[in-house]
Length: 376
Image (cartoon, rainbow, N blue to C red; front, side):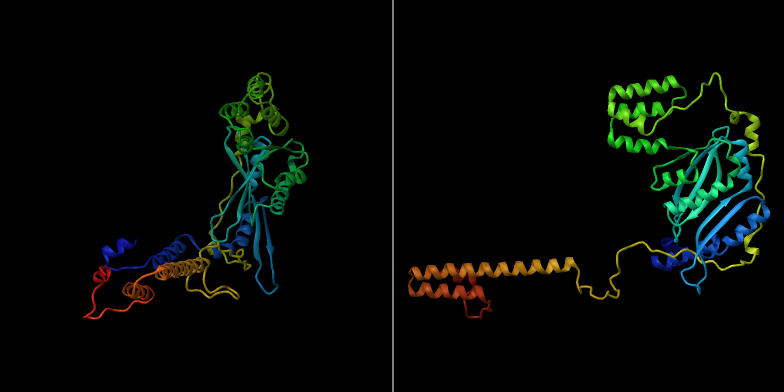
């Protein structure tokens, strides 16, 4: 942008001004993050009106009664996604989260499943402040309320080894089977048991589609490293697959697959045409730590100079003191030579040289140069 403006219009613009112009242009096209948070209550009400049976929950926090409420957490589950999971997908849940890259941060939690074609099928999402035990309980409690009609089906939940997630799943879904993602299992496995053969056999066991291949891969791991075999069998891997020749899951049939996509999500009107009923503030903006500016107001009790400046000054002091020490050594050596015995002329010349080392005086026009002094 800077080069195009200079080439086409002959205008030289600083990078900071270009950055501010780019930010304003993006706000005109995509909207402002802070103003978007004010539309979330209106969005939740519109979803409930256009898609009956959906679940939209908002949790606020208000530090001061005189302030507008601040958005803390938001949960959303469409009725079509909920019915599609219950009627047309296998009882499997994958739970994970990712960080939001906006100026206000936050974490997006999602619950997904697999359809009959092994495609990803979203169920519910939530926006929370951080991925902690309280925020996970908020997400799982509302997810359990949405899937209350699946109490007669065994549920399997897969996740990573996030802190607090294991306890939260055990508290909300006590009858569900909680398994860990193989990628996260291997991340911990390779730290304790590195090796190429262990890696190959680990993924062979994880991808085995029958009991024979699974036992064969685990036996190779046992021969290679007995401790690795014990760690996998007692900690992570468990074979619970039925015989393919005598059993076929009903969720793999075409009739059940069509049930997953039988419901539709009704479109929503434009939110710009709807006035917000409640003023909601975005989360508190926490700026990332960065290098301090040079022209800034110093904090109370802050040192006037930095540590590096102090070290440089200390080094210069040591260097100057070393020069003085060297000069003193030379003076003492010359005095010792004079005391040992020199004639009057030589002693006078030495005294002049000693005085010249301590203090420099410019030579007059009629005085000899340094080379002539050296020839005495």
